[in-house]
Structure formats: structure tokens, C-alpha cells
Length: 420
Ligand code: EPZ
Image 1 (cartoon, rainbow, N blue to C red):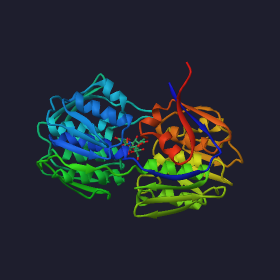
Image 2: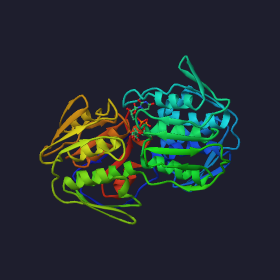
Image 3: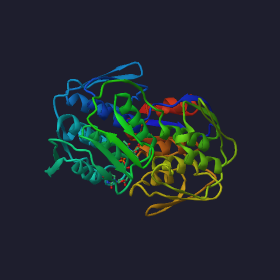
């Protein structure tokens, strides 16, 4: 079992490139099914979740291979429409394949994606939208059976701006007769990325980034070469690492416009953050100040995925910060692990109050989920002594190599095999 050993107390310095976006590439990998052609995904991140998606494509009869930092996918050989329980359990966001398989094959079968560490992850909005487009969906024994002799474009309204539901319905709508509109759509930059990819394949999608997305269905889609956008949550993580440890870093190809609420919070805490055309510079010389409050919300609100890493950065700030997690019901599982390092955090339901302490100390801790694991690394950079971070497979789902990047920025962090 691997672990990360971090020796805190070093300020950061240096420059690192930001990897491609996990939450951008996953729906795009599903979208490749719509082309039945070869697609080159440049800057595709090498992640556990990407490997899980490749296994799904291969199980459906498609192929994918790496060429440098590009992933070449070929979906011409699609010969099935069933995604096994084992593959679905590897990554709960595999539900994103449902719309594309249905659009391409007219049917789809997959096990109900379970919840995850963050709590129940329902897909009722996905299924309701697919049914409105004409899919017949039944569930028996935990397996979803979907049939759609002919999907028809409709005006859809989401009861909440679900990222996954917006993406799934965009993909299904590509296979529907006529035009589909999605009202109350999610506005995340990853939705815009998916629109740009579909249009590069010959699609006619518009409105992504606003609450109203429109898809003209049944356009012949072809392969393309596409540059994956940089990962804004990885960017937020490394900005918080600099805030936690102190120092001066530069994040190449990071884009501040996708992270305005995160950089605003870090500036309020006392960080000097400057964006230019090529990336973002972050300098933190003084002990951070606490900030008024952090309330997660759908984009362009404060991203739930950055809640844990910002919390970790504020553990030694002067004063107290109130967090409110409005998106997921169980997204404070990292708190107990941070308390083992000397953090002062009180949780009541969806609210967490972080009171800054003078010091943190290294401790053996365990990742509870992807971003919670990253938060443990951020906190460990500021802790005295050594922190051993276990269960790091969670982190590898979304970070190509968090230790490689943090070491490049001057951190004392290594990956080792834990003794039995
Ligand atoms: C995406 O998850 C991201 N994952 C998550 O990132 C991110 O936290 C989340 O969006 C919010 O920004 C990927 O893109 C692969 P949602 P998704 O549907 O699509 C409820 C990370 O760390 N809901 O917007 O699953 C749901 O329970 C991951 O990179 C329904 O009730 O998020 C949640 O409370 C974690 N019914 C809320 O909506 C539905 O049908 C937001 O979920 C769908 C969602």
C-alpha cells in the first residue's frame, strides 16, 4: 500500500504546469462514442479515473492508446451497450456514459452507480431528462435498462444545475431528432469544454456557460484533435499549498477566470495573486488572515471541490472562518484527519468553523476522498515534523502525481510503500 511522507516547514518556490482537467476529460471521453471515429485528446491527464473510462470504452469494443501526452481514442468498433457493475463501481461518474451510449446505440444497460464517499450520488435528474427525450428506462436488481427507438429533441428543465445531468443530456440530445434545450443547466467551465469538443466534432451546441444550453441533434459527428483545458481544482490545490506553506510559486497555463471565487478568498486571506496570459503567480509571505465565510455553490459560486484544500490552507490563520458546504451532504470527512494534525475545527451539519492555531504537527492520516486527501497534503506542508498520508489511491483519481508537482515547487514529499 502506497503512502505519501511529507516533512512540513518548507516554504514553496518554483513553477509547475497544470495538468489537464479530470472533470473536463471524463465527459469528453464519453462524447467520443458519438463520433464513431478517431479522436486525439491532447494534454489528457494520466489519472485513475481516465484509466477507468478507457476500460469502459474498451469493454464497449472501442480502443484507446497513449501517444506522448495525447490519448488517441477510436470508437468506430463500438459493439456493445452494456457497462458492467465492476466497471461502474470503479468510478461513480461512469453514469456520464449513459447518454452517449443511448444516443449511439438506441439502448444502454448499466448498473445503478452507487453513492460515494461524499454521500448519495443520485442520478434522478439524468433519468428524468432522458425519459423526456423519449428513453424507456426500467430498473431491476440494481441494473438500469434503457431503450430509445428514437430520441426526440425536447425543452428540458433541471430542478437543480447538476453538472453530470447537464453533460449527460447534452450527449443524449446529440442523438435526438430536432433541437433540445436544457434550462437551469450547470454553468461550470467543463460544460463549455464539452460544448467546444462537440462543436469541434461537427456538432451544433450553444449556450454552455449559461443556464440555457441548446443542442441541435442528429448532426453527423466526426473525430477531431482537441486540447484538454487545464484543471481548475488542481490549480486551486496548488494555490492553497502555497498559502499553507508560504512562498512564491507560478502555475503555468492556469486560468484565473475559472477560479475567481478561490483567488478572491486567498487574496482576502493575505495572498498576493497575479494572473497573466500564461498562468498565475501566488506569493504568501505573512501568516494568513481568516476570511469572513466560504459558502460552496454551483458555478460561478465557490467550488465545492476547493472547500477542503482552502480549509487546509486556513488552519494556521489568525481568527476563524465559517464554511458552509451546500452541494454534498458528507464533504467534511477530511476534518477528523486534520484535527489529528492539531487543527481546531467544529462541524455542525453542513457548517464547519475553522479557528486558526499557531502550529500544526505531523501525524499519520488517511485520505477519505479525492479532495480531502489533497487537503491533507496541503496541511502537512505547514505542519512541524512528518505526516504520513495513507489511502492515497483517492488522490491518484484526480492528480497525475501530486508529489511530483509539490516537489517541483520545493516541498519535501515522497511516495513510499507502507510496511506490511
Ligand atoms: C461533478 O459531479 C464533479 N465530478 C464533482 O467533482 C463536483 O464536485 C460536482 O460536479 C459539483 O461541481 C465530475 O465532473 C466527474 P452534480 P456531479 O450532479 O456531476 C445532486 C471531484 O472532486 N444531484 O452537479 O456528480 C447531487 O447529489 C468531483 O472532482 C441530484 O440530486 O455533481 C449533489 O448534491 C467530486 N440528482 C448535487 O446535485 C441528480 O440527478 C450536485 O451534483 C444529480 C445530482
